[in-house]
Length: 255
Image (cartoon, rainbow, N blue to C red; front, side, top):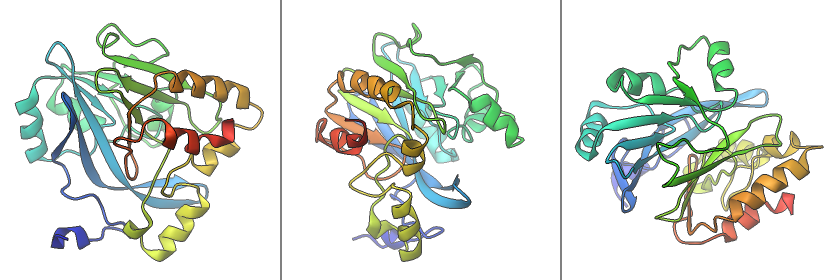
């Protein structure tokens, strides 16, 4: 094990190296970002973060949930192509967009349901250009499928599927934090929140779906119809070649 793997940040051992491209499939990369804090119930807890980059048929780049950038990461991304899209998948994933928009002002910044209001409530100015809905825009509709996963009063998330690589991309609908990467006290708190490996839908999302389960189940069934081979997550360990089994387990509360 490399020495760098032993470094801890706010009770979390992140997925080093950070802020560097990691290939997933042809034209798909992920980037592990810095540890960030998110409010879960009455407390603020640290989470590892991750962004995804897809090269579109135009050669342009589609950036999902952009993490805090570094000069070195900007250079790596510039070598891939032109950044055309900056995507917020849900109302909690937006903090990195202003820095990327400043670097790539011609890129379109896409807002997810509720994110504009959330950013304003945090006194943060995020320069969104357009809004996401259930229909993928023409800019990527032939390469990426999308749907808004509805039901929870806590968060509505735009789910994406890259057809060529059979890759599903999820932000907060499933988390899979590995216990060995968390300090014991944090591990206990996050276990209560339902965010630990082998992965599940966080408790706050499940509880706030009460009375709307049928709506969420319909979204789940639509998502499963894609039959993904791999699943990339914003928080925790990804499922790189396990098919739909991890999703069936994580969403068993809907079946």
